[in-house]
Length: 256
DNA sequence: AATTATTGCAACCGCAATTGT
DNA sequence: AACAATTGCGGTTGCAATAAT
Image 1 (cartoon, rainbow, N blue to C red):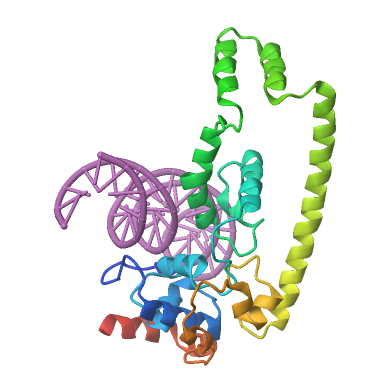
Image 2: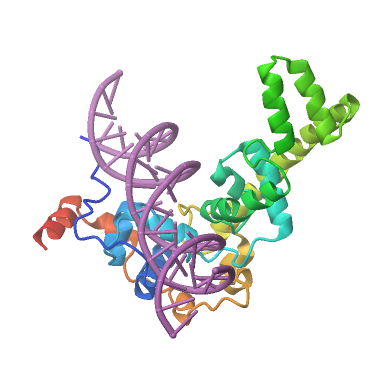
């Protein structure tokens, strides 16, 4: 026997979330954290499936989210990361504290793609479109060394430039690993000390400052309802849930 | 003012990886 | 070890807001 199914989808609400639903979700998670998404809607009193609750939490009411448009600097960094990682949005998003993979993916599809096309760069290969066409012709002629030379001409690099660039890229990657490691350590320390039961939340970038004073991470032009900050008041906890007999929980649901 | 086209974003869907029984 | 539930991810869709005609 495996586990209980995520949800049967019968009688569950779909579509945009209402303020009341957000309130219930935030109240529950701020008070209790997350141990099992499947149980969150049941315990929070929501007619949504766990998957929907998870997605909503990640993309909207999370207190550590950075709001507002992506900056040009962020945009350039996304392009650089996309060239290295491809469409691995969650990996790309992990480089941007407070940004979600969905947000970055949407921004890529709606803006950056266009921007690159206007600049004559293929958003998939990150190469000059002019060069792409030429290299396709060259491929038909089966001449790989010429392609390489052509690439260097288009990008404007000599072989020695490439060697320098490769060395720089290697160093950059080492620095990146160091940076990510220190970030993880900071986040872990914050989670241990924050007082909120958020250890199991999906939130690789939650900062100590944000957890102590949620309003500091939110831009002034975005109004956050007062209930958001009044929510830390336990109603149902995972402890009380854990004390419940599994059968009792599911039988009572079936009786409804 | 009415209609149509475009844009941007939130949410859904299906699949793969991970985890629990 | 095998099976099934759960989670996380990326692609896609639906829809509201806005712009263009």
